[in-house]
Image 1 (cartoon, rainbow, N blue to C red):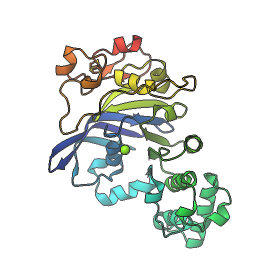
Image 2 (image 1 turned 180 degrees about the vertical axis):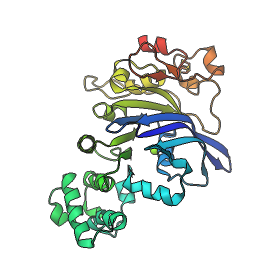
Image 3 (image 1 turned 30 degrees about the vertical axis):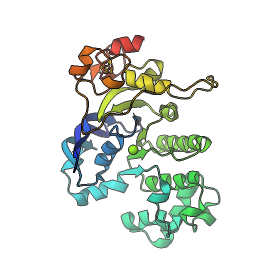
Length: 327
Ligand code: SF4
Ligand code: MG
């Protein structure tokens, strides 16, 4: 495994109390594999990613348990200086909002080039050449001219391509993309996602794709991990999930994807709101919203059951995963 997160716990200490943002998350990504991490906002998917990257705001965010084993070593035991070397060179992150991640007063060429100057001691001139190459790689037209331009001179989609180029610059083994296309128009979304998937295959990187939208990952992910209230509630190969979800929450997410054949009808939405992380419901955290909930769900927290009816490595944190699978 390229990356293995084991039993990760993250808390946020605030004046109002302790928010339990991540409560025992385990997942892994292999070299050349794409894992989609799915969930509503507040499910802990971004916080888990920030813990992996070592960019969790601290305080108030605090990792209270677990391991992040990357290329054989637990990153949580490294000193900040060593972490910084891993970041960028061996793992990189792409954020939703390129405009706030890029420096508005530095040309994109200089920002891309800086990766090589800082990490590889390259001359400014060579770094500029590299920047143009990278912009070509992410298919920004007229890269040679546009390398001098500033972030605001690019469209949203083009800016996101620049973010991808930055992440790719040092050819990291792992990229984490947090809602990389959420801010874009639907057609541009598809193009950027396709580009990301293509580069991932070409560079054989591990890719963690964080999204709230099950629709955008169908074609690019190998596996999906669904998060709810800081836990993984379902984990399975993408095709198995689309064929039949083994958790009612996943079913709800699937049913809320707009479909082309569904004209005019009202889109299904999971009723209710995600739980307050300072006061997570007992038993199964999803029970107040679950259409399949029984008495046991209000008292007994479901472990991640192995879905034994599947040949693949598959898990569901639902007492009634069998009924869900066949329902
Ligand atoms: Fe619903 Fe119960 Fe399954 Fe939780 S354990 S998802 S409440 S059926
Ligand atoms: Mg987020």
